[in-house]
Image (cartoon, rainbow, N blue to C red; front, side, top):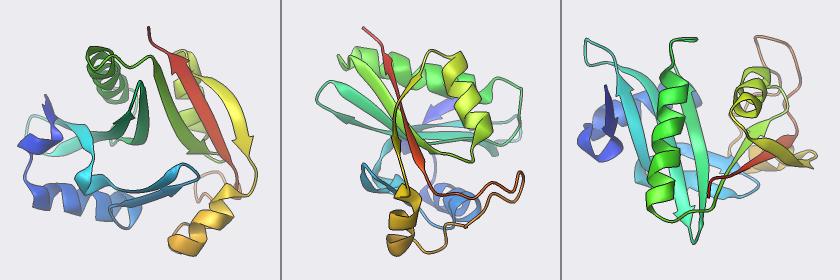
Length: 159
């Protein structure tokens, strides 16, 4: 079941972000965001537990995805959340979706490309700059041992 973020108790959202990201703050080359203050959608399993989360920010005719988490791979959670945001963005007359991911996040890079997103820019060493604001960002991806340093900007036209 997918619900708007505003329909989920704040303490559940806070706990989720602290466990997944260390805090509710996201720092990228596009800005610093408090995910507690963003629009978003939450996916809940049958027990009512969060198994997916997406946050986004709309400015003029662009929708930027700030975070997307799926706690269970290959079950359609990420796709469902992404589709929900794209639909919402179209309703808000957005023409473009965009997001930033890091060079080590091979799953995300593959995921977004399969859904029509195109890498339009690489921002070298952007994560090193973000670490000045959020030092808990790890130096290396523990799963694939790729150093985390660059950002990739992905874009998709939606209208």
